[in-house]
Image (tube, rainbow, N blue to C red; front, side):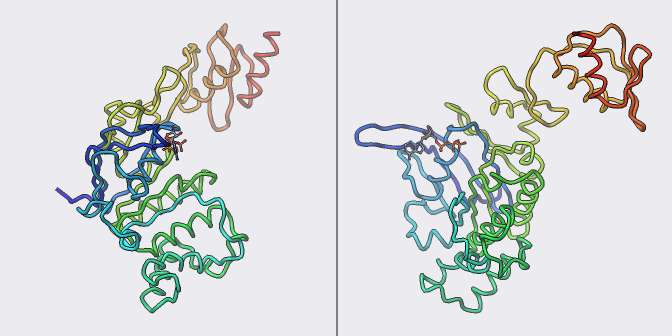
Length: 325
Ligand SMILES: Nc1ncnc2c1ncn2[C@@H]1O[C@H](COP(=O)(O)OP(=O)(O)OP(=O)(O)O)[C@@H](O)[C@H]1O
């Protein structure tokens, strides 16, 4: 069996304030492997960032241990740890007049010291990181003058330049649009594969994580950490651990979260993918029942109901609503 880059054994951790102790994670076991991207998912406040802080050595385990390359995390000196483990956290403030190249070069600080003087190897590492994240063309651009997605890639490039075997990213796609979220996650997956890095990404993007991650860690209040292939967790139904309560469920066929509303039956004939969207619109409009069946066809799109034809779902729903009044 492949050796894990990070191993957690019976980890219990929390926060202490004066005499008060607040336990957040209890008796967790986990393993993070090289060459894989693992996504850590769980509801707000369950302790994902707390687990990240423990892995980064910022929070001491109350009991249990975390090992990085078989050595306990607490026994690493800070500079040594920075060479093994790189981090991308959400940083609200970055100097806007710093260039992308300068930011990425900061990733070399564990190797150069605070003087920041780059040798040939450091320059190469910066160039490689810019190339891997496909932002070489942005090298001389200022951070204040590029898009959020580009800035996020620059942060990832900085972590790559650091050249640790393990990369931890806490919500790297927050505030990005759908296309950029996909792109960043695909990029991280590619990097884990090509550079044999162990990458841990905290995310709330279940659907994108399903498309891109090799492994999932699911964290839920009071339960052990569940890990496995996303596909196995879907097939076994364990993915529903992310959705406590009875309001939502994971639709295995469609691969997405859906709200559970008592389904109203409509008699719709036509291609499944069209009938599905029509059914959704009728349900959202609060239409409870119809007098007759509906025929839907695509190319050109048309809906037939009681001998009348409609060119769009909107037109059809509006006509039903106006009859209701
Ligand atoms: N510095 C702190 N001191 C005390 N309690 C804290 C501290 N940081 C976090 N907590 C508490 O620990 C619990 C877990 O917080 P954490 O930020 O790890 O959750 P999370 O799963 O990352 O949440 P989210 O998805 O909202 O980012 C919360 O109840 C939070 O209030």
